[in-house]
Image 1 (cartoon, rainbow, N blue to C red):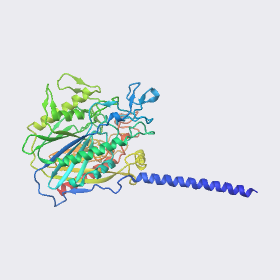
Image 2 (image 1 turned 180 degrees about the vertical axis):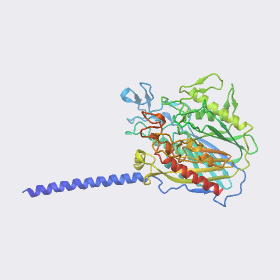
Image 3 (image 1 turned 90 degrees about the horizontal axis):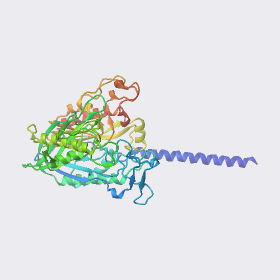
Image 4 (image 1 turned 90 degrees about the vertical axis):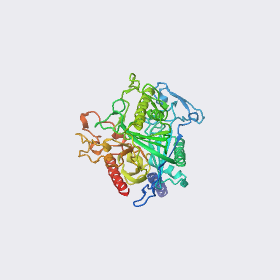
Amino acid sequence: MAMPSFLSRHKVLRSILLSALALVLLLALWIGYRSIGPYRSYRADMMKPAPGQGGQPGALEVGVAKRDITPLMDTYDTWVDADNNGKFEPAKGDTYTDKNGNGTFDLVWIAGFSNNRPAKGVHDRLWARAIAFRNNGVTVVMVSLDSIGIFHEKFIEVRKMIDPSLGIDHVMFSSLHDHEAPDTVGIWSYSVIRPRFDRKYMELVQRSCKEAVEEAARNLQPADTILAQVTAGPDGYVDDSRKPIVYDNVIRCARFVKKGTDDTIATMVEWGCHPETLGGANSLLTSDFSGYWRDAVENGVPDPNGVKGLGGICIYFQGLLGGLMTQLHTTVPHRNGVDKFKDASFEKAQALGENLAILTVNALRGDKAWHPADTRVAIAAKTIFVPMPGLFGCGVFLGLVHPGWYWGKGKTELDVIRIGDLEILTIPGEMYPEIAEGGIESPEGADYPSPPIEVPPLRSQMKGRLNMMVGLANDELGYIIPKSQWDKQPPYAYGRTKSPQYGEENSPGPDVAPTIHREALALLKQFHGAQ
């Protein structure tokens, strides 16, 4: 009589085991699918013109366009900040108004500083700005975004959306790392456990990029070039909040005018500093000092000590801001020579932007600016793979951040662009300036003591008369830290006893910088050989 009971228990146990096996298999399939990532076979590898090829150089053509990427705030819910700390915390009395009646809080989550920062409104508009170049059979477009940063696969998707009949060979995208713009990464949207990433906003940004790129290409017209550079600070402009003290504080600027005239088509500027003047308590969307800078270059700065604007469209491409390049601790003087701004405020952001604009305009109109005779356009792009260990690597493996796992590595990209005397190297994250400018140290107490690995400095290996390095380009890998300065475990470097300096928690790992440096050197060598 016991046999049926035994068989019944056996069947139940077998059923449980089969169910568990099925769940494990489903989980494995789900993880495998997540780790594959989108556009797995995509490679950006290209060189144009190819060695020994290329059309006859003629007149450089330049086109420009912009699109508004400010969220439509009327389509989102509103909220009340009970303790005025800038964070949505219902446990502390914060409330929201469910405008669309869906029973959940649909807010615009601001990126940077900390998660859970909803926007209350818009102070100034956010933009996608594109500039196109064409000559000797090559067409390239560069896009700058008022954004915290965007992962590589999103830009690949935009490239695939662009009208092929326009004959665009390559599009480079860069984010300004704006700490007062919507979250386009996914780590600042309410909480890690209950994320509320706004995919519709991401689609707006992508669609706007496509439109700006296409319009810039359609607006191509013969142009002349004026190049210049000028040092901005550091005093009164930017601080380096982490040792060693190394800056990317030279404004490198290019002005493109309608051929044979002084009518500006566009002005390009590059400089390295976090757009975070308003601080973490701000709840208004803004392009920070970047917007004031661009507006002042275009429209001028009033007296006292102002300048006449250049007209056209100004495009700011972020430089090397790791390390950390910030104005949070900087006292910014007003151009009147009297007022000074130390605390976070729009007045401080405006003063910084206008001071940068005055330097920019005066440099481009000054006697040290030059008109290059070389008008050739060239582009090299290279897909590379960087090590991504630890928690960041787990997030990549599970498709939670930077989707696409390549056996312990993530896929990203480097570009080299040449516009006559102007050479541009792109970096897919927030590089520490010492990797480009020199000054890498191996401090006592760091985790990987060794002579500096990322040598020679990258900018010294560029061959333009004016050399820009654009950060957060085609990707956002976080901080790119020299390996000999990596400092996560005690004893800590630079005499610190309780904690290391800030940075490593927002970096994929200690081998990212050596990999990017090595691959950038190789791409520059290949590019220069081809040209």
